[in-house]
Image (cartoon, rainbow, N blue to C red; front, side, top):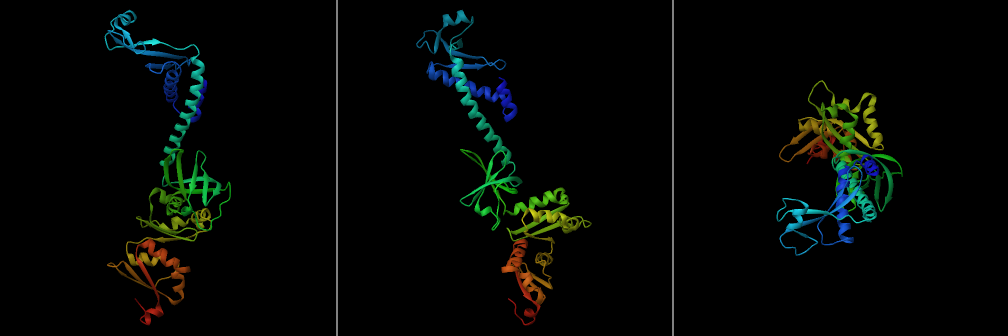
Length: 344
């Protein structure tokens, strides 16, 4: 009984759940060892732990099977007022049932603890889908990274890993919970380092204005390990959304960049005007003019000659992320190209 109390406290499993599990298992143990066809009830004393087995027999006029039935006359002698169809219980606890009970109870308790722990772990992590967890890198096998989350182990698939990011064993990292599945071996947690949701949650943790709702994240475009663009907006004109995210002397954004291992972050101001939004999204390039076509959702952008390569970015990355962030097709041209009629 003391052990059950300790288990309840340590594992967080209701003791009554264990009592019922043991009673159910002892019924099977009794039938297997003493009487396979009998209807029996096992009672485990909640205070002292004593075990009793009761055979349940139906009251009938004529007994056909003594293991399942009792005559009306005998029933009346045991319990006056008994009627046909009533159930009368007889104690049939075997002398050596304590030993069998102990062996069976151990197996059942171990099994129920496993089931209960799996259930609690699943409930804990399924509620954290779309959230950040911190874990220790455990090992890497066949391009899969296994992360120790304390109560369970998570898997990071190759598609969720950041290209070129080297993770060392026992290194503590932040991860985004993508999905939690129930499996025969317990809950399986899938995590990510490349998901845009990781950026969102890091900003929510680092920037109080975002957590409180004063500043809103309108969009995120990410190429994990290289560059991320995030569009922010504040309804209150007195609040600077970009400045709130950057922080005093860049402390807030630097904390996020550090967690992302140096990934570049462009924080831009969201604007309801698509032309202004596209121009902002092409930061750090300076834009001369933006002409938008709502029917094709295309934006023609003019930049100074010396800003063209910056606007396009390495292998087109800056323009590509700007298009992804805004949802507009972005076509960049320099002022000299526009002047010579070189346009689409």
